[in-house]
Image (cartoon, rainbow, N blue to C red):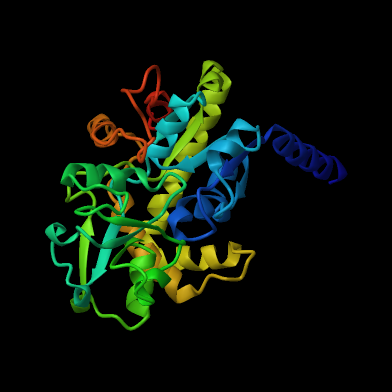
Length: 328
């Protein structure tokens, strides 16, 4: 009996010793936007792949690109525009997986403001998120031929906080919202959908790839790292599919992992139901056509106001090497 016990302990120790540490830096705070990763950790999917994953929440003062550049993460979640902008500035980020097949970025306006179509934008104040989220907005304004400096015939840009106060307090005629978060906050504030006019960036022809997984290019030269990332992506996508099929459980997992205590279960359930629409059907493999559309959107608005990219990305901005291995 003692021999069997000792063998079991040694086997357990060996398994733990062999676990590969992986640190993931999120783009934003703990919420259902990242449910797949939290579910994969909670349900043991990472552990099944031999991974010991640390998930680091983001926030308004945390730029994932800076974190990975400083060695604080092995892999990050960010939007393609921000990743391509960082790449052009010398940080060689590579998209290795794209769990979000569709985007949730929208623009919503109060009908009472008089905005019913994009033709009503001139002279208006529009709320915009920055820190990389402004790129598709400026591309949209360029497509519409609207100046963004507040001049006659153009629009005034309000640097919007990551909430909906600017709309509720009527500081802006329209604001940026995510389908799975701020749009719901507007509704929760007592404003009905009939009182809103909402634009979807993708429908306006300026959609961009949103939450993807990125690593530094030089690390992909190591086959062992590629294999580790394949394990990470495989477990993450298993987590995403579980979250899609079990949204209420996924929402509870998010709340349980929110150290800030700020997340409400009801809101996370709403978020998960909307996020599931964006990950549905995705295997994690990036669609090259969606990538080209993102690049085209950004290049259509090259200007001092839209300093995302000034030319088509060079080198390996994305790869299927990891997802191909993960999907074997």
